[in-house]
Length: 328
Image (tube, rainbow, N blue to C red; front, side, top):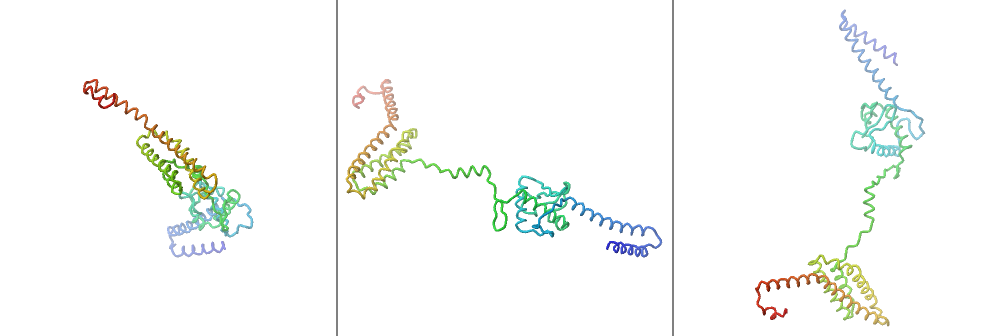
């Protein structure tokens, strides 16, 4: 085949010499230059193909890889998983003695995202490389399959395709742990216990107990107003909200369940104790209310006394004023 091609070249060279020679040297040199340029370009193309192909290792592969470069979907999926892992932290992947792959975008998405470099010099995109150099492209795929099978096993398998499981970053683990931690119950307020006690009181038929609970709710509403006007006194309500009232509501719920056992001998005794307990809690709340304002009343009385003493000292009041008002 090569000899036949060379014979044809010399034949056409002879024809051109006859047509354009005309006994002069310049046309002959021009024709020879064209022929040599064409021959030199073809030789360089063949050498480049051989040089690129020689940059790959050619290990022996099993029967799972076709000699024609046809690979299964599972093998291609393995390659994609491996390359996603690799280019997450690296910029280049060597696939031969002098050939490497690099991502030309922000991140790896598929084989179309890769460019081919030889000795650090850009050659073409991997897709274009496959069209121009199919044998070398097949060697690249073989090398990628070898790397994927030896170094990058997929974590999840679904319908014969390997799917990469997204890694959980430390920050995401911390947020997930925070979400799994039970949130603290909201701090109970006077209004919460008013609503709870009224709901339980609706199902209690005993009049004395109901009246006692009405007084409890009235005292709680007064405490709620004092909380808003005297915020510095809220610390005196901690035990009331966290201990006393939660026990009372639990007792009322149990008593409500025992309404169906009124014939039990213990029922009447329990009713009397509950009535007494409600009166005790009401007295305790009155004491708390007094303690929330006692300092303010003391300050108020002191200010009144101070003002009266100053007015009297300055002679701005009559002598009988205090006697008539009952202050002396």
